[in-house]
Image (tube, rainbow, N blue to C red; front, side, top):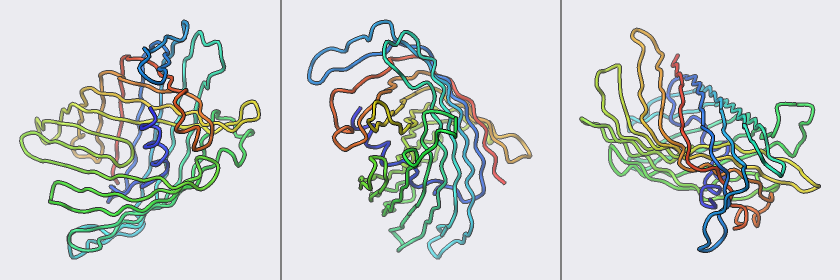
Length: 307
């Protein structure tokens, strides 16, 4: 869980929309089925069931990505200036918990991004953003604690036409003060009878798919996503992180004579960490807060529109 948490913190509001060359609106609803809540002790000790605690989740997400200026350079790559708006709302159905648990998370984000070529083999992507990460939808309780600022720069090596690999730094205030995290960038896209795509940009998205027609594609996918709430409890600043790793079949249908496409996914939630940690470097690396929900059904449906 520690590795997943570090990746998530490093990518908060980072590189919003750098893939997008056209204005795009996306909406998605995800449902994670009910499962038990467990604790994984440090070392080789077996996992422990936390009483009769169990829970499910439903997540609503939306994003609007708007290129503000764009041109194609001499390497046939776009030079972009743009902005992105993102929102996520997670509602948790938690039962039989003896200790207080977060029942909802609201994340609102605004980011600006830039992408440009440095040479035939190298390019740069940078972003600057801010967001609200709250354990409630009640804005009357909003304060500076819920606001997170971030920025990042990634250098990308174009190894060939299918593979991009890069790394850089992200700076954000998720721990209550500016903190530098390493970031990694990977995009491998192979087009043929079967399409293979692996991306580590905003979370993780890996898939292998088959294009049955020019309007319908079916892929088997593996995704990692999550939400974060910044809060104060018992006089202590905390981070509540909710992450989920899911896998399943993901169909995508492009609606004829339109700019719309519909996609869904049905499969399993493999691992859903959900726990509090201190809002400090020590808290992020702590080994005594590995709490998670076990395997459960997963389904989602989404809509994309380019205009």
